[in-house]
Image 1 (spheres, rainbow, N blue to C red):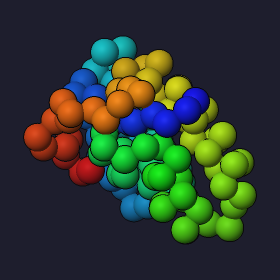
Image 2 (image 1 turned 60 degrees about the vertical axis):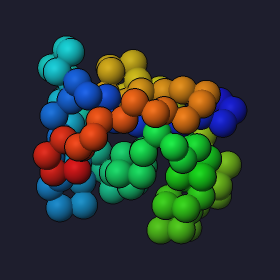
Image 3 (image 1 turned 30 degrees about the vertical axis):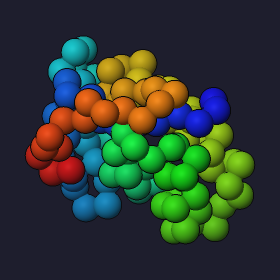
Image 4 (image 1 turned 90 degrees about the vertical axis):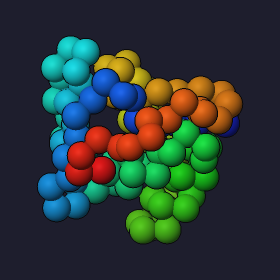
Length: 105
Protein backbone atom coordinates (compact mmCIF):
# COMPACT_ATOMS: atom_id res chain seq x y z
CA UNK A 1 0.00 0.00 0.00
CA UNK A 2 1.18 3.51 -0.68
CA UNK A 3 -0.14 6.41 1.42
CA UNK A 4 -3.54 5.28 2.60
CA UNK A 5 -6.02 6.75 5.02
CA UNK A 6 -8.27 4.74 7.32
CA UNK A 7 -11.37 5.59 9.30
CA UNK A 8 -13.91 3.54 11.25
CA UNK A 9 -17.00 2.51 9.35
CA UNK A 10 -20.35 3.76 10.54
CA UNK A 11 -21.59 0.14 10.40
CA UNK A 12 -19.92 -1.10 13.58
CA UNK A 13 -20.41 -1.39 17.30
CA UNK A 14 -17.28 -1.04 19.45
CA UNK A 15 -16.33 -1.11 23.10
CA UNK A 16 -13.00 -0.72 24.82
CA UNK A 17 -12.15 -3.33 27.44
CA UNK A 18 -8.91 -2.48 29.22
CA UNK A 19 -6.17 -2.07 26.61
CA UNK A 20 -8.18 -3.83 23.90
CA UNK A 21 -11.16 -3.14 21.66
CA UNK A 22 -14.04 -5.43 20.80
CA UNK A 23 -15.65 -4.51 17.49
CA UNK A 24 -18.63 -6.04 15.71
CA UNK A 25 -19.54 -5.54 12.09
CA UNK A 26 -23.22 -4.73 11.74
CA UNK A 27 -22.98 -5.94 8.14
CA UNK A 28 -22.08 -9.58 8.86
CA UNK A 29 -22.01 -9.82 12.70
CA UNK A 30 -18.29 -10.63 12.63
CA UNK A 31 -16.73 -10.01 16.02
CA UNK A 32 -13.14 -8.81 16.38
CA UNK A 33 -11.08 -8.55 19.52
CA UNK A 34 -8.19 -6.19 18.86
CA UNK A 35 -4.94 -6.58 20.75
CA UNK A 36 -3.10 -3.61 22.22
CA UNK A 37 -1.25 -2.74 18.99
CA UNK A 38 -4.35 -3.04 16.80
CA UNK A 39 -6.27 -0.91 19.33
CA UNK A 40 -3.66 1.86 18.99
CA UNK A 41 -4.11 1.82 15.21
CA UNK A 42 -7.91 1.74 15.56
CA UNK A 43 -7.95 4.73 17.91
CA UNK A 44 -5.68 6.76 15.61
CA UNK A 45 -7.67 5.92 12.44
CA UNK A 46 -9.17 9.37 11.99
CA UNK A 47 -9.42 9.46 8.20
CA UNK A 48 -6.97 12.35 7.92
CA UNK A 49 -3.70 10.75 9.06
CA UNK A 50 -1.93 8.38 6.65
CA UNK A 51 -1.47 4.84 7.93
CA UNK A 52 2.33 5.09 7.79
CA UNK A 53 2.18 8.11 10.15
CA UNK A 54 -0.19 6.29 12.50
CA UNK A 55 2.25 3.40 12.67
CA UNK A 56 5.24 5.69 13.24
CA UNK A 57 3.53 7.89 15.86
CA UNK A 58 1.70 5.21 17.81
CA UNK A 59 3.01 1.70 17.25
CA UNK A 60 6.71 2.48 16.85
CA UNK A 61 6.57 5.01 19.68
CA UNK A 62 5.00 2.49 22.06
CA UNK A 63 6.85 -0.69 21.04
CA UNK A 64 10.38 -1.62 20.03
CA UNK A 65 9.57 -2.69 16.48
CA UNK A 66 11.12 -2.10 13.08
CA UNK A 67 9.00 0.52 11.27
CA UNK A 68 8.83 -1.47 8.02
CA UNK A 69 7.70 -4.62 9.85
CA UNK A 70 5.14 -2.62 11.84
CA UNK A 71 3.78 -1.01 8.68
CA UNK A 72 3.52 -4.35 6.89
CA UNK A 73 1.60 -5.83 9.84
CA UNK A 74 -0.64 -2.74 10.04
CA UNK A 75 -1.44 -2.95 6.33
CA UNK A 76 -2.44 -6.62 6.71
CA UNK A 77 -4.60 -5.74 9.73
CA UNK A 78 -6.27 -2.85 7.89
CA UNK A 79 -7.03 -4.98 4.81
CA UNK A 80 -8.74 -7.57 7.02
CA UNK A 81 -10.93 -4.99 8.75
CA UNK A 82 -11.75 -3.30 5.43
CA UNK A 83 -12.81 -6.69 4.05
CA UNK A 84 -15.35 -6.97 6.87
CA UNK A 85 -16.57 -3.38 6.51
CA UNK A 86 -15.15 -2.29 9.86
CA UNK A 87 -12.68 0.24 8.46
CA UNK A 88 -12.93 2.48 5.41
CA UNK A 89 -9.82 2.86 3.27
CA UNK A 90 -8.87 5.56 0.76
CA UNK A 91 -5.85 6.92 -1.07
CA UNK A 92 -7.01 10.42 0.00
CA UNK A 93 -8.10 11.82 3.35
CA UNK A 94 -11.54 10.53 4.28
CA UNK A 95 -13.77 13.50 4.91
CA UNK A 96 -16.93 11.60 5.69
CA UNK A 97 -15.99 10.38 9.16
CA UNK A 98 -18.90 9.91 11.60
CA UNK A 99 -19.41 12.98 13.82
CA UNK A 100 -19.34 10.79 16.92
CA UNK A 101 -17.40 7.58 17.28
CA UNK A 102 -19.14 4.43 18.48
CA UNK A 103 -19.47 3.93 22.22
CA UNK A 104 -16.27 2.98 23.98
CA UNK A 105 -13.95 4.39 21.33
